[in-house]
Each structure stands twice: as C-alpha cells, then as structure tokens.
Image (cartoon, rainbow, N blue to C red; front, side, top):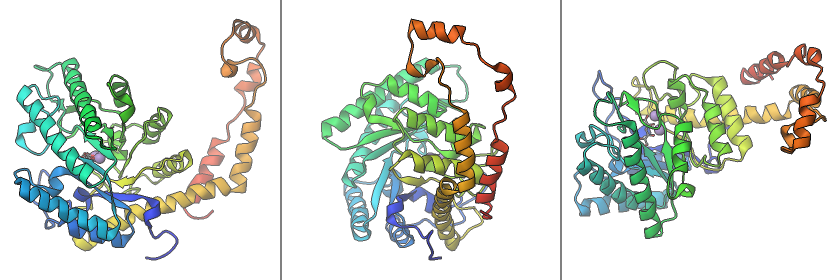
Length: 390
Ligand code: GCO
Ligand code: MN
Ligand code: MN
C-alpha cells in the first residue's frame, strides 16, 4: 500500500533477522516456515522501506562456524547492507540457545561458562563493529533461576557486573564507537530473570565502571507480560537519559511471551507510547522485535513487517492530530491554567523560609477536593482520534 504511511528509511524502522526469519517453532510444534537467508531478508526489508536490521551472532554465523566461514558470512551481509543502504541498528549475542547456557551465561554458577560467555560476547561484538552498529544489546534470557537453592541473587549480580565492566573496557580498548543496552525481561525462558524490569536495570547501570556507556532497551511485551505500564517504564528510561534503543511488539497481559505485531493488541497503550517517543525527541531505531503469527507463510511474514511499520506511522500521525486538535488543546490549556499555584512550594527548591511558608499556608482544601480533572472527556477524545472519527 503506498500512501502517507508508507515507511521510509527516515522513520528508522529496524527488524531483527530473527523476527522476519522466525520459523514458528514453539514448545508444542515444529517450524512452519523455512529458514530465511539473512541477505534475502535485508533485500526484502529494504524494499519495504525499513532503515535497518539487527542480529544475534548466530542469526548470521552458526555456533560451530570456522573462522573462514565466519568471514565469508559477515562479508556477504556487509555487501547486502552496502547495496541496499540498510544499517545495522543493533547487534547482540546469543547467550541462550546452546545447552552450555542452561544455567545462564554471564551469571552462570560455573566459572568456565562465564568465561566462555565473555569470549562469545567479544567475538560477537567484533562482528557488530565490522558491520557498523553503534548499539550492542544484552538480553539475559538465561540469566536467572528456577530455584535459589544454590546461587544467591547477590552473587549473580556480582558476576553480571564483572562481565559488563570487562566488556565496556574491551570496547574502549578496541576503539569501537559503541554503547551497550540492557534489555530487561521478567521471565521466559527462565522462571525468574535477573534485572526483570527497566527500573532494576537502571539502578544496576549506576553500579558499573563505565555507566555512561550503558543504557536500556525496554520491550513492550516484557513489561506487559508482568502487568506493568510500558510507557511509564520508557518514561523512566528517558528521565534517566538512558533510552538508547527500544523493542516494539505487542502482548496480551498474563499470557505466554507472544511477541505479536506492534499495536496488534493494545492500540491505546501503543498510542501513548508512540506519542511519548515522538514528543521526547528519541532518535534511535524503532526496532520491531516481534514474530509473525504461526499461521503465516512468507507472504504473511511481509504483511506482518509492513503492519508493524504502518501502525507506528499511523499512531505517530494520531499523536500529531492530538497535538493539533483545537478542542483537546483547549481543554488542556484550561486545565493547565487551573493547575498553577503562585504560593510557596517545592518548585523553587528548599529554603527554611519556604518550608515555614508551606507549613503555615492556608490551603483551600474544600475547593481542591471538589475540582474535577476532565480526564474522561480528554481520554474519550483520544479514543475518537484512534477510532478515526476525529
Ligand atoms: C525475547 C527477547 C529477545 C531479545 C533478542 C535480542 O523475549 O526473546 O525480546 O527477542 O530481544 O534476543 O537479544
Ligand atoms: Mn521479548
Ligand atoms: Mn527483545
């Protein structure tokens, strides 16, 4: 479909190779789609108007590849990126599929596994650097536990910190222009994953040697699985100056890890998210980390990819309508006018005199207690924008 919502590279949409390449394998069933060649995926995504891709080391280079194979595959993808003009928006390490990571990677109780995870991450960071990414993701899918019978969570965080401190130094040593992001998730595949939320990750980052180099990669489905408000999590990341990347998809709260097409389930939550991202000046990738329904063939995969991008673009347009809607902005202006206070408050900072003034101020609590907020009216106007009648 070619219209004002047709995606262009300026929109900065990116897709994981593992998303369009997802074969529909699940715990109950075999793959329903054949493996997709990464070079083919790059060309198709370029045709659809994407800005770039992302990858795990093993989406491109098999776990057991020889150095020569590795070089050939990396070179092949580099040529595809050069030919299409697509960028590598993010790269990451697969530290979860191989059975060696059964009890974690950086936080494994086994020191040999922890060292192997470092080796795999450094080799994968090298691939990312060769292909030009500036963002390197850490999703600790296996970094967690089902039982705390052996490793304490304090020990696990110490191991995790050792790994991050080592790897940021490695990146600096190599002179790579690269920042790290931590991608929090509450559970799946582990029963409990360490650093389960954006807030946990943001604090952990403050304990790192190179904290400036590390931000977060929040994912819509991950907070939604836990019943949390994703837009609030993103807001906290923005407030901390740590929103370096974002994973967009969708999810029904309380279900398995669904990774649905962006905005396919929670339209309104997606609207508030897009509004926040666009208004915040976020200029990183709009990265789709989602899977086509298992019902789909390859045509369905591209319908899925188009759908992710179109929904984002349409919601961005809806956010612009919200900002331009005279009735909505009129209500907001009236509310803002009624929300000002020129008496003593925390706004100007603390002084003993202000503290005394606040303590002794005579507030008209009867008036405050009866003042309505008009959010019903405003929120319905948002519904009408989303439903397309405004
Ligand atoms: C998930 C995660 C992953 C990561 C990806 C990059 O729930 O499986 O979101 O898709 O984003 O592995 O590290
Ligand atoms: Mn996920
Ligand atoms: Mn993700």
